[in-house]
Image 1 (tube, rainbow, N blue to C red):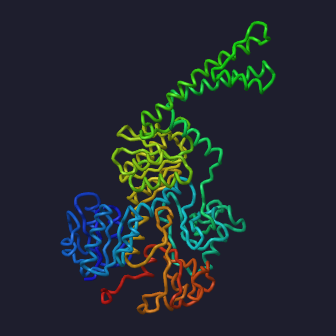
Image 2 (image 1 turned 90 degrees about the vertical axis):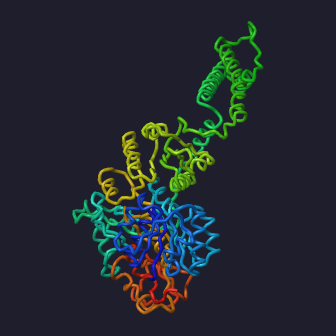
Image 3 (image 1 turned 180 degrees about the horizontal axis):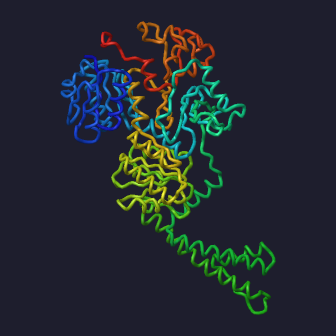
Amino acid sequence: MSHYLVCGGNALAHRLIRELIEHYDVPVVALVPDLTQDHGPRISQIPGLAAVHEYAAISAETLRACGVADANGIALVDGTDQGNIHAAMAAEGLNPGIRIVLRMYNQRLGQHIERLLPNCTSLSGSATAAPAFADGALERPNSVQVNGRYLYVAYDEEIRDNQLAVVADRIDPQDLSRLRLLPETAGRAAEFIELARRFGDEGQGGPPPERAGREPGGVAALQALTTQPRQRIPWWTRLRWRVLDALRFFTSARLRLLLTVALAAVLLGGAVIWWSTGHLGWALYYTLLDVAGAADPDRPGDGSGPWARAAQVVVTFCGITFAPVATAIAVEALATGRRGLPRGPGAGLRDHVVVVGLNNLGTRVAGMLREAGVPVVCVERDPQSQGVAAMRALGVPVLLGDAPLDGQLRRARVQHARAVVSVTRDDAANLEAALEARAIHPEIRIVVRLFDDEFAHHVYATLGNVVSRSVSYLSAPGFAAALMGREVIGTLSVFRHVLLLAELTAEAEAAEGAGLTGRTVWELEEDGGVRVVGVRLARRPADVLWNFADRGHRLRPGDRVLVAATRSGLARLSPPPRPDAAG
C-alpha cells in the first residue's frame, strides 16, 4: 500500500491528517503518542483514516511496523527538534528517497537538515502563523512577498482598482458560513464586472453593498503593494519610549520620584535667579555652581533680592541630593546586578501590545512586534517556559505567576494598550484573556488563537474588533503540499479560511491529465478553488506577467503559474503520485 505516515498527536497532526484525506484523497496512517491525551481521541475518530498506532517513541522498529518501507512520505509534526531529526534519519534509512516533512522550531538547523537529507522539507508552524497574529494586532494587512510584490487580502471599501483577483464573496462576519472562497467562475471578466457593479464609479472607498441597497455580503480581493506595509511610529514617540525605558532600567520608582522632584526644584530655582539677575548666562552660571556645591553665599549689601537668595538655597540643597542618588543608581545597576533581574512594565508605558503565552508562537509574535518598533509586555504562567529567557534577553517585560488574569493584565497596563494577543494552547484560556481585556479596555483590539472552528464563529459574532487565528489551520495546508512535493509560498487568512499562494511548473513528462502542460489558464480556474494571478513563460522565466491577459494560452513545458488557491483547489492541481509510480 502506498500510504503516508503522520507522526504526532497535536492540533497540527490532526489538521494535517484531515487535509491529506479530504483534499488529496490518499491513505494515511497515524502514529500517535497517546490516544487518550491531547488530540489523540479526535485523530482516532477521523473518517477514512487507514490505520492508527500508539507509540511511546518513534524508533526504527516502530516505523518498520507501520510500513515506512512502502510509504510515499512521512510527516513528523510533534516532539522536539532532536527527536524529529532522529526519526527522519531512521525513515530515510528504511526507505531511501521517501519524502520527509519535518516540523522544526529552529529554522536554521532545519535548513542544514534539508541539505543533509535528500527529499526533505523543514517547516515551522509557528513561523508560518506568527505574521498573521502580529499583523492582526497592528491592524495592518498580512502580506506574502512574491517577486518583489507584497500580496494581501483587502475587503470591501479597501479594494482598489489594481486587484489581482476576487478571492471571496458573500462575507458576513456575523455568519461566516455564507462566505465563499474562490467559487466557480464563468471567466475572469465576470469577477471584475461584479466588483464594478457593487462599488460603482466611486472606486476605492465606495459604499459597501449593504449601504448601496444591493444584496448583502462583502467582498475580498487579492491586491499587491510594491513595499511592505510598516508600522509608522513618530521618531519623537520612539525617543520618549527609549528615555523612559532607560530610566526604568537604571532606577526604581522611588529614585525616579526623588530625581524628578529635585530636578523640578533646580529648574524653578534657576528660573527665579534668571528673573532676579535679568541675565540668562549669569543665571546658568550661578545655578550650575550651586548644584555642584560651590555656592558663594551673598553678603549684606550686595544687592541680591530675597527671592534670589532663597532660590540659591533650594538649588544648593537639591544639588546635594544628586550625588547620593547617582551613587545609589550605580550601586543598584552594577553592584546588585540589576541587569539580570526581571523587568516589569513602567508607569509610562502606552500604545503597546500585551502578548499572553510565551510558547513558540508567542515568542515569535512578541519578537516580530518588537522588531516593528512597538512596545511589548508578555504574560506567562509557567516560569520555565522557553520564551521567558528569550524575551528578558531582549529587554521585554515579562509578568510571571498564577495570579488572577485580570490582575496580570492590569499590571501589564492593558488599559493603555493598543491590542492583546492571546496565544496559549487552550481555547478557553485565550477566550478568558480576551474577555478580561475587553472588560478593562472596551475598545482594545483582540487577537486570539482558537482551534475549534465553531467556537471561533461564535467569537466573531459576539465580540467586536476581534481577530481569530488557528496555527494548525494556517500551517497544515503548507505541510500537506510539501508532503505532496509542492512548495507553498505563503498563506493568507480570509477570516477563518486559508488562501494558499503557490507557484507550479508545467512538467515536460507529466502523466496524461495529471499535469499542467497543455491546459489553458481558463481551464485551471474553471472548476473554482483556483485563480491564476501571474504567469512566468518559459522563454521569460525572470518576469511575472501579473493578471495574464491570454486566458486561452496553453501552458508549455517550463511555464510556471502563480496561483491563489483553496486547499482543495491546490490538491486538484497537484494530485498525489499514482500507486504504480511510487518508488
